[in-house]
Image (cartoon, rainbow, N blue to C red):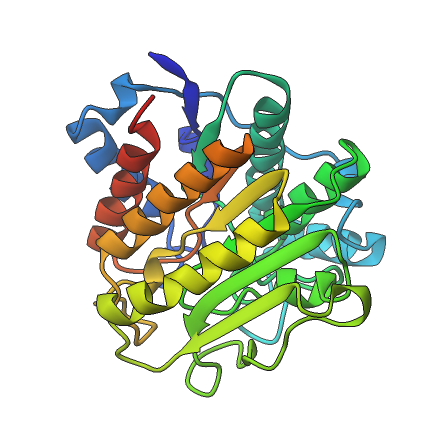
Length: 315
């Protein structure tokens, strides 16, 4: 077993979902794990356990009022945590807190051990805001990890890269004026897809002006279009010399997803992973990859397993 690669795929993480009649069902982790095991990847990586985030950890990003409301509605199991996308089903708050806690466990491992790279298939809940849910995201594990890296580890150069079909608004706007976070986000043009944000002219505010890169893509943009834009992302990240790199690798940008209109291939995600691995190695920077969205189970399995295979190269 190669201890330098960790994959967080404990079955309890599959509890994060909204049931069979919701696009974000509870079978996404299972789809990944079946292919993961079939390829023998489970024998090549470390498989650490998951854990719940504490209230103190969640408060690094979220407001206390929102956490109380979300927890209360989750115990009732009725209503929505946003304007209609994110149901307050029974137990969803604890399921989300497990996603966040597991991301924090991965971050701690990356910062304090010989682990260089990790993959969290159930992670990358990038629509959650400090004071609300959004787009199937009850909490924002990305935001909590970023705040933890700043507050607990003193990092001031963190790079967040996002290739999910949906713009990562919960990360972008909550850190829009923060010069310690560089953002590069390739997504379907907000004129055609939720959340309707992430225009190219949005490049940050105040001291963070120029540190945020949005690359909206027209519907039906394919692998060639992605590969044409990707060098801009790499250059943007490399110039920042980050101390920690995060990639939200949503599989909903792959052709055939029922909710989106991009036509990337799993090869796009493999290329993003490979080139970020090389950049992270050149900077001696840890690399955390989160699975993000994806609502076609075949795409999830192929894309995410391809990412794990890329993480294992040269190790």
